[in-house]
Image (cartoon, rainbow, N blue to C red; front, side, top):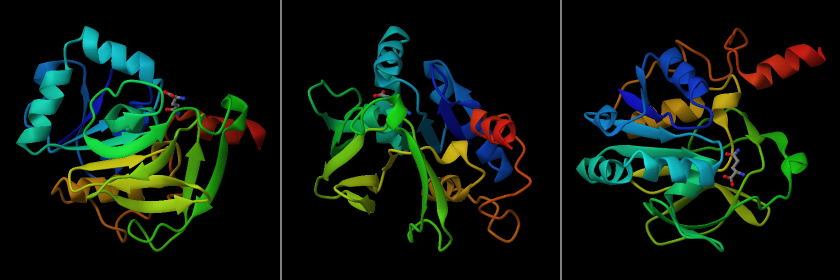
Length: 216
Ligand code: GLN
């Protein structure tokens, strides 16, 4: 079972992607919800807000305890900021992966964008990438691998225990990153022949899908 930290941000889309892969997804709101998880996803949203809620709900120690027990963690966008050891100009929150990250590094919300790229460790097929007021990973430390480098920044990185992406795989029809993370957690997600990475029949209620329908 993989948990999704459910304090603020994009939770249902992650659970939807996990369930399409046959992996049960569990919203995590309090300490006890963290017990016996193979992995935890910290979603995108607003990192200051999620960080304050982590403190208010007193959940930080429990996340770190479960992490030390072996629970893997994936942070998307705001989640990656919360996991970083160094946040430019700010104090780190969880500090569980040795990388430097800079918030809002592309500019304002209007500088959000979408593109596509082949990220070979994840999939041989192009993966759609959505960047929403994203941070940039500026440096990774020893033991942390840059999975995907773009221009002057790193967009995805991982250590043996943590995955960090500055974009939002949960807001596309693609399940490749969720499959990769499930395998990192030692789970056995449905493979490419059972469910394609970009599923034309994807039918959840994500706002990006609704925006596409509205534009069509
Ligand atoms: N700009 C947000 C922050 O700094 C992150 C945005 C996101 O998660 N899409 O927390």
